[in-house]
Length: 290
Figure 1: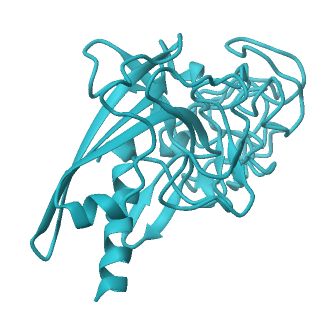
Figure 2: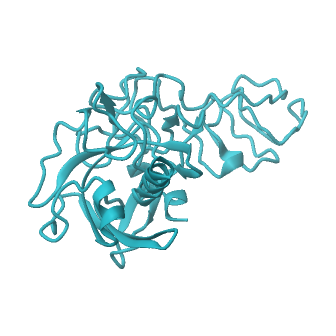
Figure 3: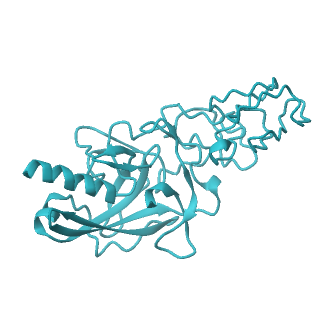
């Protein structure tokens, strides 16, 4: 009975930490996400290899007037003009363009042409300042699914805890006691948790930081508040979490093309509305708010 209860409560806690998940695998890009390599099978014959999943079998009758700089407007709706395969326009994500060719262009803040997500330029061609919202991973035996301040955190060197907070690395989780989370490539943050209600439940959950005194996030990030109710066989408690999330003005401020090695798919980071701060936008995967 006790073991089952502990596992269930820990699973609920994992769901509470929207996007804070297991150590192994929920870490880095690992080189799988070269933007523009979604593996679709466009057979239009042009050199762009724009791999549309729409199943069209056009043989360059698709109105594109490019000389293989790809201005195609074929049925999947992508209007990439870059000459490489799109990064998933069929799933709602814009073409990665020339990100990864080593030359910063158009919206790219940087482009170092490599697959190292932990250097100063991410594989989404955004500047990696090693602060809040940047890729991270946990190493060592201290990494656990229920406490993302534990273990040795890599990638968050510029994240300095503010009063009441602890440095954390959010990671994706897949079906952890029935719960999922989506933080592709890890997400550097600060966090604090408190619990009120049944002492058995509250004593089992890790409580990093001091929730009441944690009121400030580093520049360029916003404090997000999350609340979850726990009810296990009449044992009721309320879990409160505070985390810092990177602020943004457009999707390209975020790691749009981050590969999620836990889910084996492209993540869905975008510039979305904060649930706590009216008028503020944050880089986050909105599936974690569902």
